[in-house]
Image 1 (cartoon, one colour):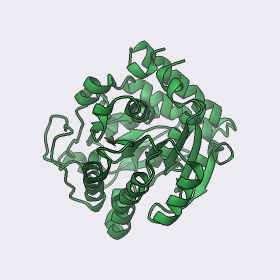
Image 2: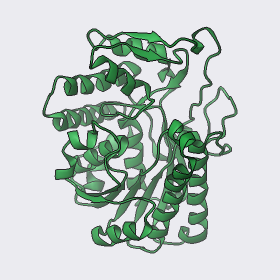
Image 3: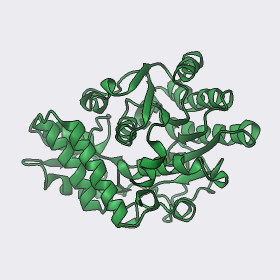
Amino acid sequence: MNQLAETYADRRVLVTGHTGFKGAWLSQWLDHLGASVSGYSDGTPTDPSVFDLLGLDRRLDHHVGDIRDRRRLAEVIDEVRPEMVFHLAAQPLVLRSIADPVETFEVNTMGMVNILECIRERPEIQAAVLVTSDKAYRNEEWDRGYRETDHLGGHDPYSGSKSCAELVAHSYHHSFLRDAPTRTATTRAGNVIGGGDWASDRIVPDCIRAWSIGEAVTVRSPRATRPWQHVLEPLSGYLWLGARLLTDEQLDGEAFNFGPGAAQDETVADLIESMTQRWDGAHWKVAPGSEMAGLEASLLKLSCDKALRMLDWHAVLPFTETIELTIDWYRSWHLADDDLRQISIDQIERYTTSAGHAGVAWARP
């Protein structure tokens, strides 16, 4: 039994946004660890839905509600009496934030206010991991990784709303929770890929949608470079941070980056080419007027030195295995494999084994 299993077995955990891509994977992992998982979400955000495909509605204590509805959220928390909270409920899309900035700030910023207001009124909650985004940083066009002490900012409503959420968490910690029984911390991650993501305007889901019907995917920014990471990498950080919050008061009120090593920095073109090698008949093309002959998009990457120093956490998967796990999951879905839950559990176990071989603290016996 590893450190995560010892922490979460039989523990009551609430996950907000549990029907989303990361929320569903986190809920599946917690269920596999033996936790008593309750979820709060306003519905499944995509069709197909990884939440539905994993059958999580039948395995978890599933509650429907909007993160903007503090009264409903409080009712659910009083009913399930969680010992720990993972807050992932969000409006996660940049283009949607531009189309509807009010909704984005209401969900991402006031949603953080609502969950923290509920937490501060319930001292029986022992720890809360509050998920924001790497986009919370003010992009200074640096080559180095952004550190947790760097300026927050946001040129678009999504980024701005996540920066605001960080400030909300910071102010609640110092005003209400610093001397309270509940310990909190925020997390920042981005460029997450993996099986089961069907969000719009993301490169991997766009590829799968096109390839699954035998079409070529059209790419706008093939030269853009991103630090890709598999969804299980940041989730392991969230879980380990939650476990450590229970025992280490020095982590209370801190922020942590969870991202891949520099070797994971690959262009969109490299990402797609790697995926085509595992999907028969996959093709792609560059959109007319794209930046193929122009400037490359800026790279925003994270420094995870703090997570290594304070949590003994680091990413473990090489880029090739990140692609392998991602495409193997989607290919099983495409071939109508009816046991995607078991495939997901197998990937969690495989990742845990890799983390153990890498000597990461959370995977040790």
